[in-house]
Length: 111
Image (cartoon, rainbow, N blue to C red):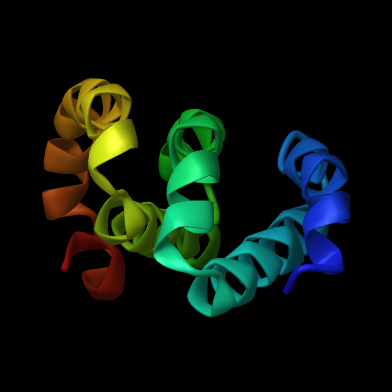
């Protein structure tokens, strides 16, 4: 995970890409990397990455929406005390969009 951390800023940029497959692969990379990072290190990137996930919650692709929401959940769990305030602000910003997805037609997204 340490070697790939250098590439994470470039991977974040791919989330803005128009190609759905590339964005999905980028989310999977983040899910794997965050899962292998120590909590303190993952906590450092959580607030920044969560900002980039919000637009993906409304993507037309349900698989992409689901991956983004699951990654956001993983990021919330990874946050340690020194980043909690910033992440709390991100969570408040995301609550309304997440609330609307509770009635998503795709059951896995709504869950």
